Length: 209
Image (cartoon, rainbow, N blue to C red; front, side):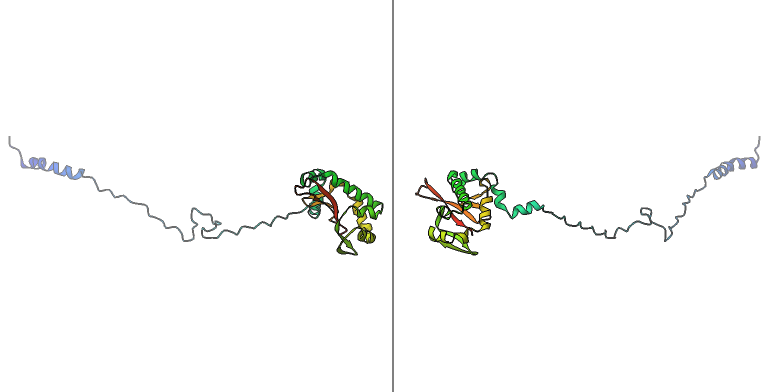
């Protein structure tokens, strides 16, 4: 049997035609266009009212300084230290700082008694000479009891009498120098009578000044 040339040609060219038809088309990926933000669009991280990072913070308000109030009683106490320092414990302080408390109390009591009675001689016997006094507002020293008794009325004035009369023994101001009446108008002090100071003498060494 003889084959015709046309069927043979078709048989030979068919594979080439099928290969060409089955070749895939090249795919092209299309990216979405990027849209630029508008020039006046707000930044996503900040609200329109946000304060720029470069802005300086508002200055802090400095609080007004606290006012310290001093109570009237405390102010008075600072001007009257002797009452605050010794009130109620004069006996203990005398015993601790000066020694024989009984001698100080005896002189104190006799001074009040003598001044209340206007007994110039009795008061003169309680003083240590030369004694510091105030006469007509001037401070001076008197050498002996006679000089004191002569000027007694000028020294022991009504004002001084009131100070001595109103003073209580348990509210005396006490320090290592002695005990004080009033604001220092009267001082009662002790002196040693021997080197060891086993004996002492307590007298008034300042009155009226």
